[in-house]
Length: 262
Length: 262
Image (cartoon, rainbow over all chains, first blue to last red):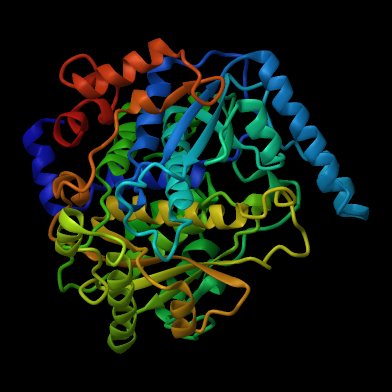
């Protein structure tokens, strides 16, 4: 795109329609990937772009509290998977009956199958010289780091790179395995790499673990539980309930319809 | 886009170049907006799309723990701003000298100037019937909600809608004001609405509060503090320091965005 047309777009603030659609497409077709990693290497240039996307997340007081530990070593990854397996066994102990049977069938990580692993951490001391925005809410640095994770995830979707977040793990054991110091919190342990496909729907939906909630049920007006916003709710319900036959994906179709009706 | 070309793209997993570029553009030009809200209404259809984007965030065990409280009432917003002002005064008490002087000059919210406010909350009891992925890391539901915030924020950027996250606030007082029950956590209080422009750089960088850290300093290999990944670091350094010629083909982040905002 020539610089002058870019400048013109900037002045109107909104992206042109195709670019808006691409952003929604990344959001709606992103998946938590466990099953579809393929034995292919990951281009360092792509990884550099993804890390740069993460690094451009918002952060409280601009503290940029994140670090990115790139884990490629096979033996180390086996060690991490062992932590996952132990944790899964512990979590399963809280389940019973059909749920336990279903839980045991779920594929919940791709630690060894993905091209690489990435641990995104939060250094809670990073801005100790210039704190801002954490006096009342010290957890804001953790949240900032999650924003970096989501940036990484969406950029990866656009690049055709799968990402799966492993949350079934003992964080203390993971910290020990990766030599993470006391003042640093591992926020996300990610499996990252090329994939054969992105599933049409979230695995947990397909497998019947849970279904997507109706968005209008989650919208409140003015106060928690407050009724109202009927026009807004009607728009979300209509768009989600009637996505049209020629649309390939549930979420993506919504954005297409909406963009097209503007 | 015709359905057949979309299907063809899906099979290759990666977005076509222009679509990838649009995703990076949203990520790199997103701003934490405080100063540039304009007195214009927000289209409910756009808000519906943004909320749907948020609703398509990843969530641990697919629990979708979020709610969206839409706040339009002017008197309620004045009440929220009063909470911000009190909190800012408290936070300022921890600063001194030049930093305090600079802090006092910073514009840190647009609560009353934006078209509307949105409180995104996390209901910690939502999946009590089917927990998954929170046995070891119960905070995962909070993190899922932050992913929803970031989805909302990036979609908003693409729509030309500004978003500013108010983190300088007493959460207990905010909960009381918005009638948020004990088991629900307010994750993000957002100012949302049309803007006159998106700043070229983050405000806190422009005002000299902090500068962006070199990405290569944040990358580690295998363990925390582990040296290595020299090729990867060279790519991130090269791209950030010398964004001009070689990376134009590779995507938005390393070309124009690097020139203009890094």
